[in-house]
View 1 (cartoon, each protein chain N blue to C red):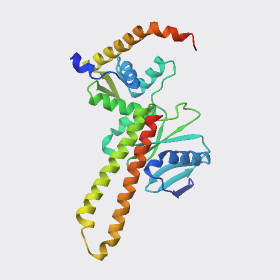
View 2 (cartoon, each protein chain N blue to C red):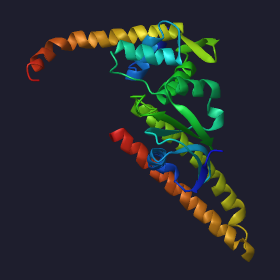
View 3 (tube, rainbow over the protein chains, first blue to last red):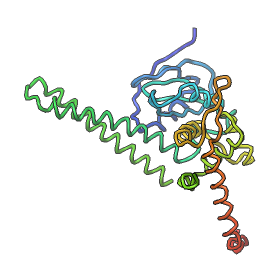
View 4 (cartoon, rainbow over the protein chains, first blue to last red):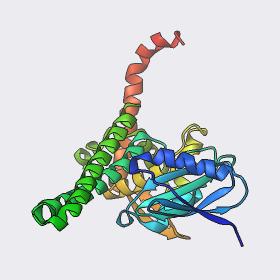
Length: 173
Length: 110
């Protein structure tokens, strides 16, 4: 019976590089990612490995799953987990000299553009509900909802700004 | 036809390499290997980059899927794709030939 552990940890959408580094550190200690979820990660214990993790954001409808996974597999990247549009790939740094799934700026930016458009879509939906229903309702029991919606909107706007900054940074590299 | 092809120029580095690699039909990994071979190992195409590019080129009508072997899609250039590849090659060749004589003045510096 393999030892497993679940870690509760939250990385914001624009902290993907931080998340990737953390997964690499876990692998160095023998903990290998097998499942992911909103703010949690499940690992199994194995040998210590020098592994590189890279994530891609591809909402389900945007991909031809078989072809997508096969191209990565052929290039030496194992698909270890997937959740909410995020795909986690892992490669061993000793056997694969290519340490990123993207080899040019354009495709790197495209990942963040997909994320940006997904988040903006959700932001628009939430704003519509907020303006037409939530903030229109004068009842006191709605106060909590109003705060929740306000925080969600601020959070998403912040997220969009952070991602735009990331895209800008890559363009300027 | 040529006017339509010209609108795709100039191609990005990666795009041009993929089109060249597809002069002979190939699947994803075959394309990556071909590019590595062509560049003596100096160029490599990441899987994320390749997947995105293949989708875009298919949408643009420059390549198409012709077969599927063992769950791997095989792609080939369309007539438009062939024309674009040729035009880009000619553009690059022209550029190098025309600027070559001026660059020789710089070659002594490095």
